Amino acid sequence: MKKSLYWLALLWLKFWARLVLGRVKPYIIGVTGSAGKSSAVAAMNPVIKLKFPRLKVAGKANSESGIPADILGLHFGESPSPIADWIRICFFAPLRALHSVFSIQHSVFDCYLVEMGVDEPAPPKNMGYLLTILQPDMGVILNVLPVHTQQFGSVAKIAKEKGKLIAENPNLKLAILNADQPGINSLKPTADGIKTLTFGINSKADIIILSIKPSLEGTEISLQYNKQKYFIKLNRLALPDFYGYTFAAAFAVGISLDLNPAAITDAISTGFVLPPGRGQIFAGIKGSTIIDSSYNASRETMIGSLRLLKTVPGKRRKIAVLGDMRELGNQAEKEHLAVAKTILETADQAVLVGPLMRKFVFPYLENHGFQTQWFPTAGYAAKFLLESSPRRGGANLQDGEVILVKGSQNTIFPEIIVEALLSNKEDIEKLCRRGKFWDRQRRPFKL
Image 1 (cartoon, one colour):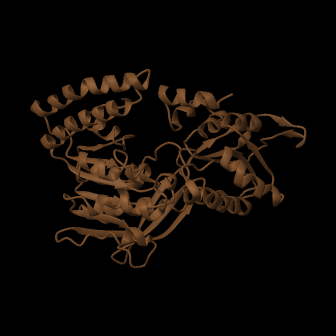
Image 2 (cartoon, one colour):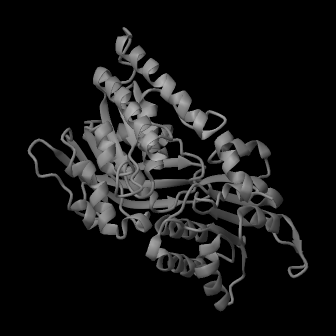
Image 3 (cartoon, helix red, strand yellow):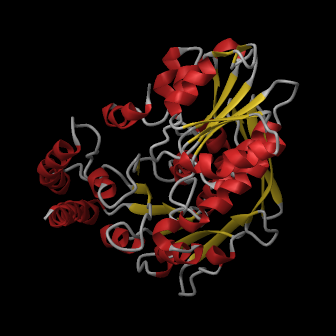
């Protein structure tokens, strides 16, 4: 019964959302990938606005329910409970749609930039279902990683499902693909009239990532296109090397829209706003520096963030505060051990959170004599860092340390730790997952 009601609600939202799209007729850019979608959309935002001033960005909406609701100007998480959310959104859906259809100023947005998340192989949480809501003019595939392998069983199956954005999209005109992953690069469309651009460190890519130089002061990215070099400079953001793909993809989108390359890099340098929890630098207590990468985690992003931690100059102690990487299925042990090996090379101490870290990473680090602690929840980890320990002869958090905080959003909520360590509590509003909905979700994991 509950499942049937959910499907009815989805079909209701889809009907009204498609009505709006049919009336507004925006240029649609769809972005998919296993990691980095929100950051890529944030990088594309100022670029696309050079071509489409009335760009609409699908914010936090990337699912079978969030996308149609967003098209209608409605959003989940704004009501006291999930049921109240659904009642409110289903009630207002036709009102918002009919207003758009009959309004004289109906063309309120000329382009729609949307993340297209794929969580399972079956509808409605797959790409096939999302393509029944909207068919992008431009499709961007960032990467395919062993995330959600618990649901799919293999990376190849993940690639096939995400690849439907290109392979089974009748409206496709432009494809932007990662040249460094054969499973993606092989998706190049063969139909006439579809243009393809590739990006990556591969020398055969159309947009080549030459370098990314991060520091606690900022990050500089160097790209090459048509044998010319272009630079993106971002202040107060410490971004790991995998962000090179983020900006290369945004650059490729701009080129596909026939924009000037220099204008593209300038737009990113001046207009890029990183979503919370993706590498922001905050002042912490006791003169510490926090690298807040608490939004989510996969092996690639975890290892990249640890390598960034290693690059911090000087003799400051480096603490890696890391939570589980979830939804990995039979890849969980392999992925967590890869992170454990990187911790040994990049940090002075590890504070671990979650059952997978306890099962795979904690014993590995202990066996290598590495200073490490494990806690069941982020609340306990935060409490440890704030307290004194007789074993250390003083505070667990000492003066001037650099602290990387990263982990899965799935019941780990590492932002709890960032919140506890902030020197300026006004910065709490700059962290990821704000609002009443997330406050309710975090409550069981706080002390």
